[in-house]
Length: 490
Image (cartoon, rainbow, N blue to C red; front, side, top):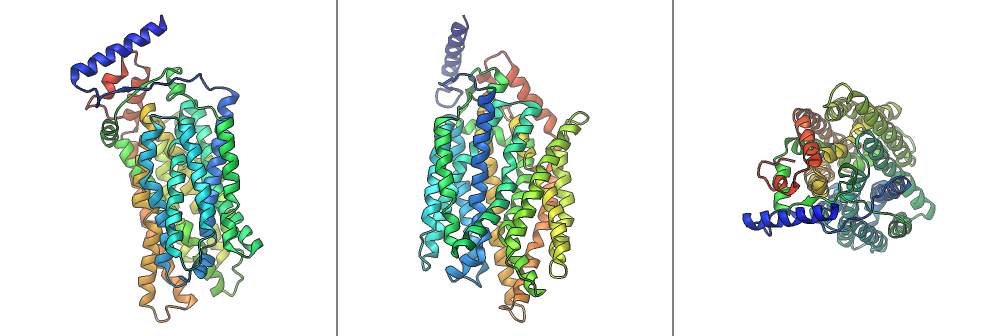
C-alpha cells in the first residue's frame, strides 16, 4: 500500500507540474533511495569525514607554514602581494567551483563526488611540489586547481552529517567534524614545518598529505555509506527537490541565511589574513627582540590547535545550554565570539614586538573566541534550509564567504603592507617589514566587529526560519507545491 501511495504522489506531482507548465522548472523527484544508515554505520561515516576534513586543513596550511621558504625559492622575498596570491588563487579556485559541487551534491551521489575531489586534490598537491623555481605562475595555477578539488569535499560533507543526525546530537557530531578546522590548521603548521625542516626542502611538505589522501579515498569507496537526503528528519523517505534557479531564489529570500553568511564572510576574512601572515609577522617580532624565530610556526600551530579545540567545544556546549532558554542562542554565541575576540586580536598584534609571550596569550584568547563559531554556523545552515537545498546553500555560502573573505584578505594585507612599506624610511629592514604588516593586519579587528553585527542580525530572523523548515519537513502534503512557491523562503 505504501508503494502505491508513493506512486500516486509521484503521478499527482507530475500532473500538477504539467498543468502549471513547469516540467523543467518545478520540483524534480530524487530517483534513488538507499537503505537507512544508522547506528555504527552513521558514526563510521562521521569518523571518515572527520579524517578527510582534518587532512584537508593540514594540506591547506602547509603552504602558510613554509611561506618564507617558498618566497625565497621563487625569488619573491620582498613581494608580499605576490605571496598573498598563493592563498588568494587557491581560494578563488575553491569558491568558483563550490556552486557546481553544491548543485551536484543535492542531486547525485555525494560519495562519488567526494572520492573524485580527494583524488584530484591529492594529485595536484603532489604535482605542485615539483614546480621549478622559475615557474611561480605555474605553482599559483596548481594551487588554484587544488582549491577546486577541496571544494568538492567541503561543500557537501557537512550535509551528510546533517542527514544522519538531528537536534543536539547533530550539533555534537558537527562539533567533532569542525574540530578539524583549527586542529588540522595547527597540524598543518607543525607537520608542514617539521617535514620541510627534516628534509631541508619545503617541497617535501607537500608530498606527505597526498599519501593520506589516497588512503581516505579507499575508505570512502569501501566503507562509507551515504544516507538519503533528510533521512534523520523524514524517516528515510526520499524528498522532492527543485531546480537550481528556484533554490537560489529561496536562499536569497532567507534573511537568516544572508546574515549568517555575511558573518561567516567576516570570520573568513580575518582567519584567512592571519593564516598566511601571522607567522611571518611574529617571526619579524622575534628577530627585532633578538630571539630565535625558528619555533614560531610550531608555537602558532600549537596555539591554533588548543584554541580551536577549546573554542569549538565551548561554543557548541554553550549554545546547547542556552537553547533551553533562548531559541536564538546559536547566532548570539557567534556574535559574542566575534565581538569579544576583536580586542584580543588587536592587542596581540600591538604588543608582539615588545613581549612575545603576552602576544601569544592574546592570540590564544582571540582565536578561542573566534573559533566558538565554527560548528555553529553550519548547524544554523542545516536547520534553516530544507534537506534537498543544503548542499546548494552551503556552496553559495562558501562562494560568498571566500569571495569577499579569505580570497581577498591575504592579498589585501600583502598589498597594503607593501604600499605602507614603500613610504617608510628603510623598506627592506626587518623593522619596516614588521610594522607594515602590523598596520595592515589591524584591518582584521574592524572586520571582526562587522561580523559580530551580522550574527546579531541573524538572531532576529532565526526562529521563523527554523520553524518554517520543521513545518515543511513534517508536512504530510506533497512538498513540491510548497517548494516551488515564490513565497517559500527556506
